[in-house]
Image (cartoon, rainbow, N blue to C red; front, top):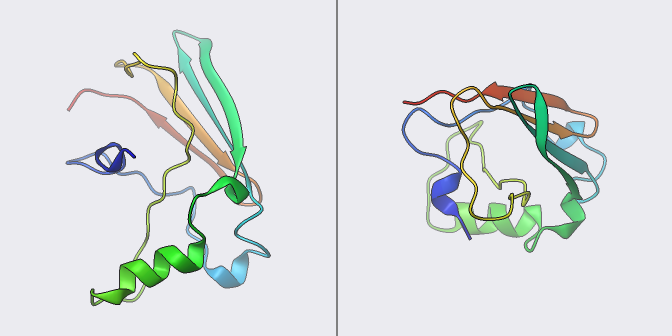
Amino acid sequence: YLPQAKVYDRCCSLGPCVVTPDDIDDPHELEMSMTIERDGEVIYDDATNTSEMVRSCEELVSYFTRHNTVPELAVILTGTSLVPEQPFDLQEGDRVDITVEGIGTLSNGVTTV
């Protein structure tokens, strides 16, 4: 479990859009893929499905709201479960593309902060 890999100062990307539960037929059946490109070459490419999540969306929301006041439009970050073999470090100039079926592709360049 890598909670620190999800969010830290100046490093949280959302997009390419945000959808609500009403926008998704089944949140537990979405294909996700991630590609990392370095110097024009793909160095990582893998895919998974939200059906592989350890906890359901309903469980995550239940945990999140159990002891917290949650503002409208709050976002729960789950990660993708797509993790390159270790040791692996992103480098300045890498590009990370994460695609979720029916939603789109979030593409980020890596910079040192």
